[in-house]
Length: 116
Image 1 (tube, rainbow, N blue to C red):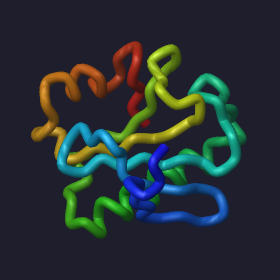
Image 2 (cartoon, rainbow, N blue to C red):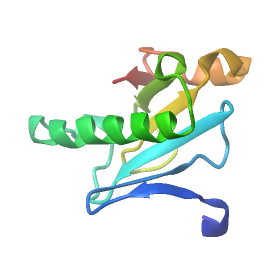
Image 3 (cartoon, one colour):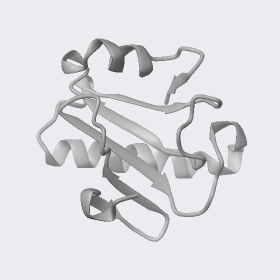
């Protein structure tokens, strides 16, 4: 991808958070573990702390942007609806400003998008 377009908003040894290049709303961030996990189906119980951290740091990023977390949607796409073969957690806010297509794509707890 074009790295210049990707604004990294947070990273540590384990995870990286950046802006989605095709945002579904005003704010749309992706949190990605640095070690490769193919997708949500590859997750194990051992990955739970990682997921907690992904969500926690996304919440912190939103907080830093003065975004009400109640207005945000957090979740994963389920294969075969994943565009990137690497686990990534979305944070999208505010949900109220998402377009119709975005709402379809990121509808919570459908077959193709699992909220955290």
